[in-house]
Amino acid sequence: MSVIANNTVITNLSLINRLDLLRKLFGNVYISSEVYQELENGLNYGYSFLNHAKQIIEEEKWLLITSVEISEMNTFLESAESLHLGEASCIAIAQKRKWLFLTDDNDARHYAIMLNIALSGTIGVLRDSVYAGFITLNEGEKYHQIMVQRGYRSPIRKLKDAF
Image 1 (tube, rainbow, N blue to C red):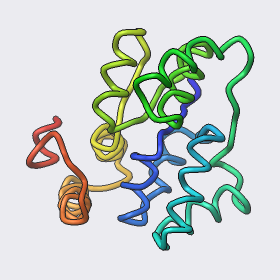
Image 2 (image 1 turned 30 degrees about the horizontal axis):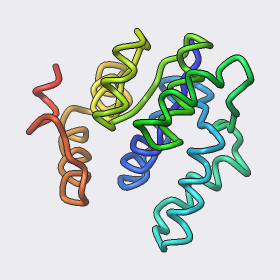
Image 3 (image 1 turned 120 degrees about the vertical axis):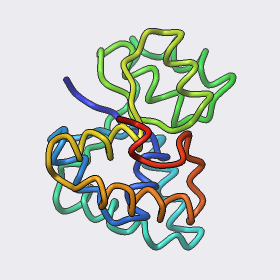
């Protein structure tokens, strides 16, 4: 199954310098051109921790950019009425192409659930990375704590609560 990630997951994993977990879990991961624009905007605002994501896109080429296709435009336009363009584009792409959607945005998650889109988020990536043996539970707890300290609004208090 292909995967498309919203800016929230890219940002959270960039905060802990562990975008590699996406590659280990999923191989290639897509972002929409709208999410890429959000990434660029973040860099322009001085969020230098996003430089690694841009480097992966430009050099390592496993974080790939895709665009909304004509057949996805109706869903994109409808969801853009209540969501940011990054989330709306990811939802449109995930629904039509039957991809897994990675997001931490509550509104986007609720919208995706209404459309029966498979989804996960930062907590799921950390949990699945522990299950796969890419990180230990203690490392996952540490990463979770760092993200929370840096502004992540986690739905859980401790990563162990996700198991």
